Length: 279
Image 1 (cartoon, rainbow, N blue to C red):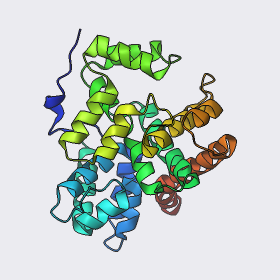
Image 2: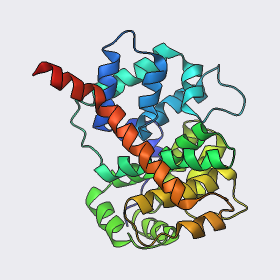
Image 3: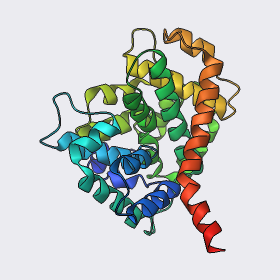
Image 4: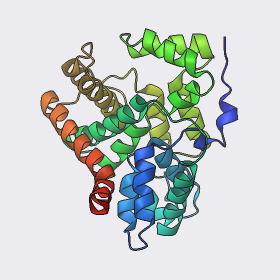
């Protein structure tokens, strides 16, 4: 058994690399001294690694409000534009490191769950910005776990692709000594992120009507993302009912698909324009 020591990751949030599309969009924005801080924050909110770093800094700040912050707009407000810009610059520099990129599916899934969570939260009158963050970070432990043995992790993930969430967590504990939900929660907790977010990471695979609202939102959002990704084993209506969320499943899927297309277009827009102008 390959055991993973969560303590080794306490000061290593940068083990989770930033997606190349996000880093390149940031590069474009950072080259413009007039780029608004909210545009930079918007791009950061599309990436789990960047979001985790900004939240960790904001929650460690003396200016952080009681109870901490979960939403990226609030975190950016706590830190100020210069600090947010510095975090973005670091991500761009890391783009040119030799660290391997994560599989495409990790970023796509995290982004899709974040967008779906924001839509679900809106339907139940919860903060969409907090839900987006929780959805984006729900599987933060996966790349940390994978980093220890990528081949074994990828083989495990493929073998349990049709299994319920708890079955996967059990196999991860058997193979690695810890599951990705626990590892991600431990690491982000050690960085001072709020308990509501930590509990969501821990519990998002097994929720019911008595779970915290944010946890139920992310559970449903995870199901929405899997339906969009083609998982025929997901029963979204059953997940909505089990989570006591009264929202139209098909409408949520359509909204999330629209949001995802818009975000991907936004991340790439300026570079398409630049290539066109250079011809």
